[in-house]
Length: 307
Image (cartoon, rainbow, N blue to C red; front, side):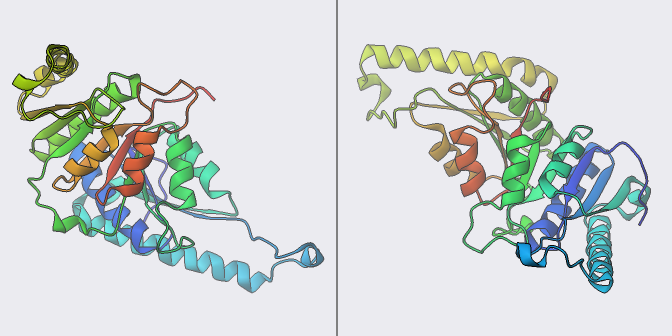
């Protein structure tokens, strides 16, 4: 274990929870595929005093030492797990850091400024079992300066076939374009196919028994949207010729359809906010729904911010 100062490719946050340890395994494999450095980080937040009447009483020294010892154990366990999940010969490219007495979410957000991607578990130690997304993972997804992968622990990583496809939502927004690029790259490195889903209506499903029976206006719109999707994927298909792409165009809300495809996929990639969003929006309704409800890793494409 070595706290080197190598520029991190992927940063993964750990806290000892099952969710965060599954995130370490996923991050180690992704770093291996990308051939980048993996940085494993454990942040110990400030000691919170129960009430004002205890504010003048400092935390006992042995308690502070106990917290640091616990942190070292967590980071060592995560480090060994990262090596086991990746390739042990890459040990010099797996670095660790324990950060004491620091606010967790702001620190992770700061680390995201230098990373290609940040990886977090869906829930941490303090989250209840029924929580959809923990406060730390939610905060990082909303504020990070780079793409964020949220790894769920309900569905073990090995339960999905390594040949399962990658799914991406495509709507033409800037973050969707970044999501498409990430999805092609992930599918190419995994040697699997890509499902590109374009939902062109947010009004719910519009379904006809056959498109031949649909009003001519609807058929024209469907044809136009299929052309739009093909145009948005064309450049990426030229760059990644080995990725087989299955295009899906639907007149429906995107979140339910993405979650439907996620049931047989190994990874979903979405933009942080889509065509209905605005530049300052932290997280759109579609990405929020997919991150909360999918049971496989979800990458939320975030464009670096200026603040």
